[in-house]
Length: 378
Ligand code: ADP
Ligand code: MG
Image (tube, rainbow, N blue to C red; front, side, top):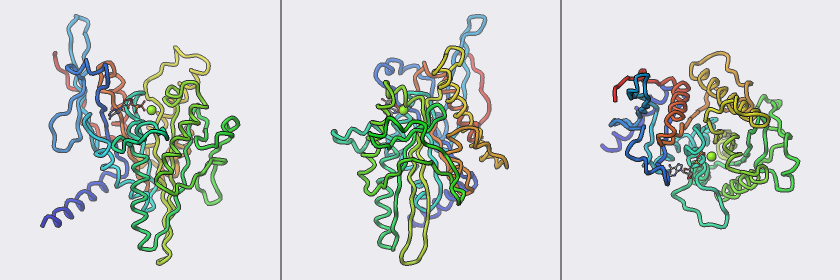
C-alpha cells in the first residue's frame, strides 16, 4: 500500500511539474554568520508556517515624514524555499532529479543569483577545494555532488549496456569576455580574449579554443575545481573580489551510447555561479570599475529577460544581448531544456534592500508573485 501511495505521489508530482513548465525558482536564505548573529532578534525575514515550504516574508521598516516608523511586509512565493537550517544534503535532494535529466539527455541549467556574500558559491560548489586538506563531505555543494551522482548512476547503467563519456568545461565571463578557468598554468598569461562563442556546422553553440577535460572519475572534479581556483588567483590580485564580479559557468557534457540497443543520448549540465547582483551605481564608478558595473548590470538583466521570455513562451528570445545568454542559448531554449534558479539571500537587516531586489528579480523570472505589499503600522 505504501508503495502504491508513493507511486501516486510521484505521478502527481510529475503532473504538477509539467503544468508549471520547465523553469523553477528556489530561494535559499543562509544562516547569520559571526558578528551578524548579534542582530538575531530583529530579522527582516520570516517563514510563515506552511506545509509547502514555499513562502517567505520580508519586512522593511522606514520612517515617514512625520517621524513615525512604519513597516511594509512583502510576501514571496517560490517553487521551494530553504530556510537557514537547510543542509547541503537537503538542497541537493531537490536538485538530483535535474541531474538525472541531464543524464537522460536533457539540457539543464542551474543558476545561483544573489548579492555578494549571500551563499551562491556555497550552494553551487561548497568550500574551496584545497587539495591538501581532507574534504568535509557534508559541506560539498551542487557541483561535486552532481558529479558523484552521475558516477554512481552511470556505473549502474553500465550493466545495461550504457557507456558514458563526460567532458567538462569551466569558463568565467568577466566584462563580457570569456576566460578559460581550466587552461593549463603555462597558458594562463595568453588565454585572455582567446575564447569565442560560435555555431558549429550542426548549429550547436560551442566555445572556440576552450579547454575540455575528460571527467573520468568522481575525484577528477576536485582537481578541476582546484585548477579553476588557481587560474582565478593568477588572473586577479583579489580573488574573491574578482569572482564576485564575474559569472562562472561549469558545463558537463554527457554523451551516452548503448552497445546493446544502439540507443544514444546527449545531455548537458550547466552550473552557473553568477556575479553579485548588488545594485552598483554607475555614478560613483569610473574607468575599469564603470565598465565592470555596466557589464554585470547588463548581463544579469539580459538573463532575466531571456528566462522570462522563455517562461512566457515568447517567439523572440533576446539571447544575443549578453555573452552569458549567448553561451547558454542552446541549453536554455531548446524546447526540452530545464532551468532552475536559486535566489540566495543574506538575512541580515543591513541587507534587506538587496534581499528585496533579489527576490523581486526572481519573482519576475518566475511570474509566481502572490499579491502586493501589505502595509502595517509598527
Ligand atoms: P557568494 O558566493 O554569494 O558571494 P558565499 O557562498 O561565498 O557567497 O557565502 C558567503 C559566506 O557565507 C561564506 O563564508 C560561506 O561559507 C557562508 N555561507 C553561505 N551559505 C551558507 C550556509 N547555507 N550555511 C553556512 N554558511 C554559509
Ligand atoms: Mg561567490
